[in-house]
Image (cartoon, rainbow, N blue to C red; front, top):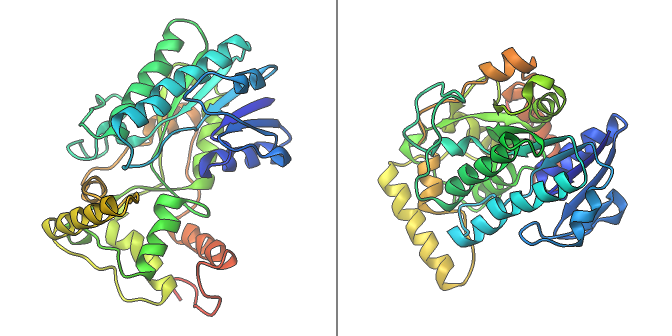
Length: 329
């Protein structure tokens, strides 16, 4: 196939593009910065432009471009996550692309208040957080295009994507732990739902290629959820530190507000904010039963194996000392 990947320089976009090239597909991409060696053209999806011409001849579009952060304002997030999705759809429809996979997030259920084992049948829930609300709206834009017969669309909702290259759940936590600035709320008892990046790629490709997936929404997660304390504890052991540091939620919120205030005064962005704290207090999990039954999706990378691979990557990229013992040894 000829596949166009938006957000092609990002963690998920770049990973998808690499997997597709490995199996022999032609892959081009769009991102804010061009990367000629990987056939990525420069383009801002929040505005129509010449980048839309790069979809000609494509069979599939995998749309990963988004502001994945708790920092942007609603206007900023809407421009990229919602309006940008429509611009990508416009380019795909004009080029006659037959399939469109929209990468969304499990956060469309909101960060708190969803049931354990939540399924795709459960209503999504805007909650005032710009990231959550624009993810909900972006799904509506994509599924509306499918309902109107413009293009066959599938929505994929990844869990907490970890592994080599993941900034939110690998690089950033390691950086903060090194600086002794990483705290877990709810005494570390919050639920984390990791999915190793290779398993996510398997799910995305199954969704892209299955005829039954057109018009459907799928949660793609890992085999099991764990406590935040267990998940982030792997990074502490990699770094040779005692931890994780766990505190009551009220204390974590106070620390996050202080960090946000300091960052604002210094005109810096930080993910250390109240929204992130609440996210790490979740108690619910996400069902992958629909993806398993309809697509044959089955995660194959356990948390321990994924963390061993992640540790090797962190070491290779200079984020861990080569003298550290492997996690779990």
